[in-house]
Image (tube, rainbow, N blue to C red; front, side, top):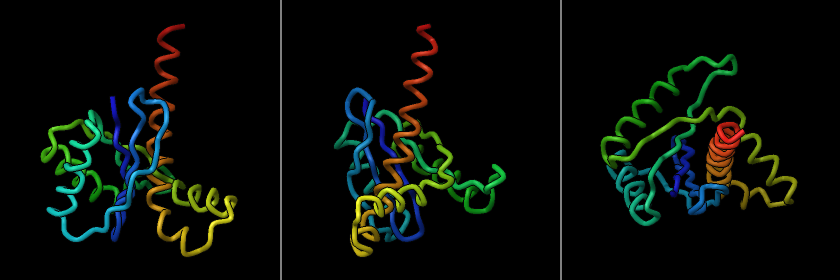
Length: 144
């Protein structure tokens, strides 16, 4: 079972993938956005390469939890991805994931240039790992 995590921005898409058992998220790449069709083809290629069963997309929400204009656009993109790939697409609250990604890179003492190149991939890792942790927790709760 592989799960793909996406942090979709206006210029790039950060990509992470789970290990085969679905415990950990690893950064894969950052897709430079060109146009919607090209972006979808790049995502489809990764889905085939990693035998993806689920796609988790970061959903931008307002700090009060409501979904604004950018969130609505993301939900529309999720439908396009689902239709193009035939794979289940779920959303994950991405509030503060980019902030957490920057913080972890600062703690790792990465230069500004390196941080800029990988921030979306790191944010995708945070999105996917949060989702994986929730799945793991729900499995544990079902057992006990």
